[in-house]
Amino acid sequence: MINIIGLGYIGLPTALMFAAHDIEVVGTDYNSDLVNTLKQGIVSFEEKGLQELFDKATAKKIEFSNEYQKTDVYIVAVPTPYDKNTKQIDPKYVQNSVKTILEICPKGAIIVIESTVSPGTIDKFIRPIISKNGLVTGEDVHIVHAPERIIPGNMIYELEYNSRTIGADDKAIAQKIKDLYASFCKGDIILTDIRSAEMSKVVENTFRDINIAFANELAKICRNDNMDVYEIIKIANKHPRVNILNPGPGVGGHCISVDPWFLVGDYPDLAKLILQARLVNDSMPEFVLSRMHSIMKEHNIKDLGRVGLYGLTYKENVDDTRESPSLQLIENMEKHLASGLKVYDPWVKKNIVENQYKNFDEFLNDIDFVVIMVGHSHILENVDKIKNKIILDTRNIINISNVYKL
Ligand code: SAJ
Image (tube, rainbow, N blue to C red; front, side):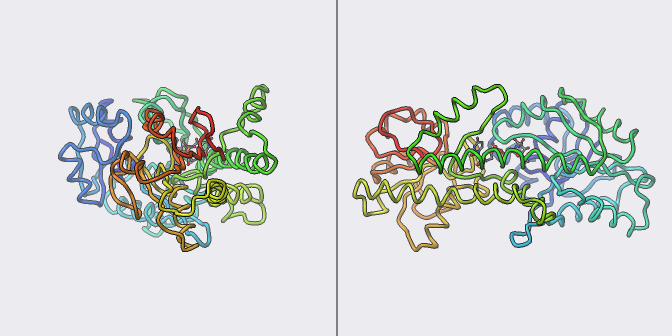
C-alpha cells in the first residue's frame, strides 16, 4: 500500500493512476471537506479524463482519509508556495508532511517528494528534520525526489506518457521507486541524485518562461514598429533549430510563473537572464492595458463599463485562476482606480471579481469591446457572436478581419 499525501492537482490524479493500475492506495489530505467530497465520488476539479480515471480507480482499491497511514512508501504532493518578497521557497507544507510521516512510519520507509522544490531544499530543510528525530537517512528512512511534470489540461495523458525523473541517494531505492511508477508510466524513467532532480525540474519551467518572455519581448518590439510578430515567429520557426513560443497576455499558473523565482531568490547575482524574463512576462498585463487604452481612444470609447474581459483562468480549457494574467490586469486597473470593466469566463463558476457575468449573451449585450485573454475552445465555438464587436485578441486565435492583436 502507498500513502499519497496531498490530494490536489497533482496528488489526486497520481493516486487515482496508481489505484487504476492495481496498486493499493490511501490518499490523505488534511482538508476534511475535500476528503468527504472524494468519498462521495465527486472529483474536486475539472480535468479531461479525471472523472473516468476516478471511476476506474474507485472500482479498485483506493481510500481517502484525513489520517496518515503506517506503510512503506509515502508520496508527498503538497503545495510549495514562495515568499513574494524574498522570492524563496516556503517549504513548510513539505516539512509538516515529513514530520507527520516520521511519527508513524516503520523503519526503512521511503518518502517520495513530488512537490516542486528549489535546488538544495531537501538538504537544507528535509534532512535536518530526519536527523533531529534521531533518525539516519538511508537507514531508518529514505528520501526520494520524483518531481511531477504533468500539464493541466492534459494531465492524465501526460501522467502515463511523459518521462519522469527519480532522484535518490541510493540506487536500489531509486530502482524500487522506478518499478513502482512503471506500474503506469510508459515514458522513460531516469534515475539521478536528489539535487539534479530538484534542479532539472526548476530548469524545465525556467526554460519555458524564458522562451515565452522572448516571444513577448518580440511582440512589444513589433508593436512599436508596426510589424506582425506572428508572421515573423511563423517564418523563424521554419528554421530547423528555432522554436519560439507564443506571445500572450502574461504567464500565469502555479509553476512557470513561480519556479524561476526560486533560482532568482537563491542566486541573485547569477540569475540575471532568468530575472529579466520574469520581469518581461510580469509586464504583459500592463502591456495589454496600454493596448486597450489606445484602441479605446481610436474608437472614442470613454466608458470602461462597455469593455469586457474574456477569460479569468491562467490558460485555456482549465478552471485554474492562480496567478492568472487577467487577475493581474484587474489588480493593475484597481491600482489606477479604474473600475467598471465587465468580465466573463465559461470555466469559472464562482464569483471572484467584480462585474463577473455568468451568462455569455448578457455579457456580450453589455459591451462593445471584448479583450480575449484566454483561448478557451468556447470562444472559438462562438466567434459568430463577437464578430461585430471591437476585438483585442491577445492569444492570436480569432481568424477574422479587423481584429486587434497584441
Ligand atoms: N503561455 C504563453 N505562451 C506560450 C505558452 C504558454 O503565454 O507559448 C502561458 C500560458 O498561457 C500560461 C503560462 O504560460 O499562462 C503557463 O502555461 P503552460 O501551459 O506553459 O504551463 P503550466 O504552468 O500549465 O505547466 C508547466 C509545465 N511545464 C513545462 O511545460 C516545462 C508542466 O509540464 C509542469 O508540470 C508544470 O508547469 C508544473 O507543475 O511545474
